[in-house]
Image (cartoon, rainbow over all chains, first blue to last red; front, side):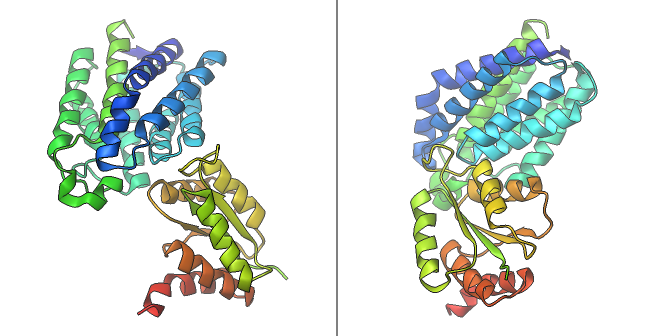
Length: 206
Length: 127
């Protein structure tokens, strides 16, 4: 893989499309075990991200990821703002100094993002949060020489589906304790959209 | 005289305005800055609002931040990391009771550490 500025723009556009068309679905998932704002917050945030990155000029991937981060931080009112904002900020820092991003650098970027989200949310894998998708994706990258689109999408999907059986330990759903079992984690579902959007970009030759 | 400033962070603008009203009955001089709701004042929190509140409440005595739920703490910590000041801290205490006690202590001219300690022990006082 060789992720360039134009690929990141397409990545964000595709992620936004998925989030917009699943806005009500994300909201319904969040109404079941959270405060019901995930669909709206993510739709608003990613629309702003797309507006921002399509109207600006970038010479490297780090700068565009930084704008993604700052937009999410300021426009997403729920916990996803600081969490996704931190994830993209860590990725931006990890790929600083190069125009485009090769696989080893991307692997480091995802690893840094996972560490950042853990620290920001004081959470770990297995607590029914977005980390339950991000961590398996990071692990997949650890064991590979290059990123395969299909494998990325299927790893993220399986990880997302597995959150259904987990009891929430972090986030609003944690207040519901065992009542949170049997529902998908909304943050894991939106994370799946983001990784499957990336898989599509890779498929198209990134 | 300068005081330790207080920043109130809640998902709801009404919550922090209300808490500020309660504090003002007893403490007129201490800077109390509400940072409630998202950038369009709907339910949520916003890091830029919190940064602005820190600016407004800041003196050389420092600022303490109080928060309610979920994203409020994360955005509070982010705002502190992004601030250029040393004496700015997030306090783990109940939003209303903690900030109220903090404002009273701050009004007596106490230091950041003293005010923070008083706010943190507020639950024991309720026993």
